[in-house]
Image (cartoon, rainbow, N blue to C red; front, side, top):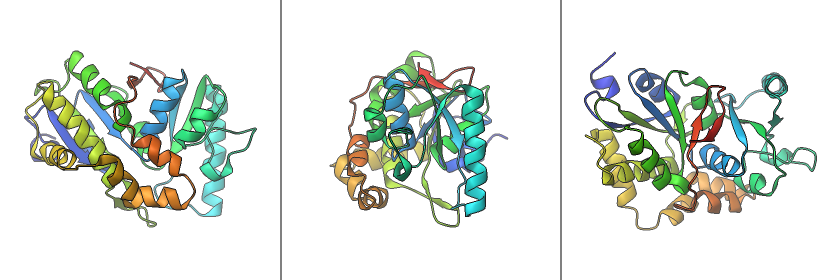
Length: 264
């Protein structure tokens, strides 16, 4: 399906959430997922340590106890099948299971060669992305590196478009909650691509770029936004701080043939 649903004719495109990714992935050369708090930030930290990260879809609405048990069983089975460690919920971290979606936990955890990382947003989008589309994980930490990698590989033109997806968060009923930090992360990447000559840029992507370039203090905006405040209230202030570390990481996580994120 071409035309307006896919922002056709442009080299850099922007959309929100799983539905946007599903629609635009059908007509793109490369899909870049941005989930600042916290999936793609966690991926940047883990891949930077040499870990191969396998995304796993967590339900997009709050699961019942029975549903959660079923998903956890499936995730455990998948990790076993892949010979990987399984990341647990932030609050469930123990010395025996020190890996979670928390970037701070991943920095401190022992090395794991392979890690299954579940989340309802970024991981869900990545797990569902078509295997014939190049898939990249971006965040505020690696914007310049990702932008350089994309342009070096010829992405960001009308012939080889790149779609930047802001993962967003979820309301309790599972519906999409557009998240400020993902808008800023996506806008930062569009801004970087634009500076490197990619384009033309769709109006949607240009709006994300303008949001980022018009934000004087991105770190403050991430911390003061709804998602940052939520994590801080849960006791994970350091995760917010790590997510706001602009351009501190040169790793470009790219999905390989086995479905794992590895350095590109």
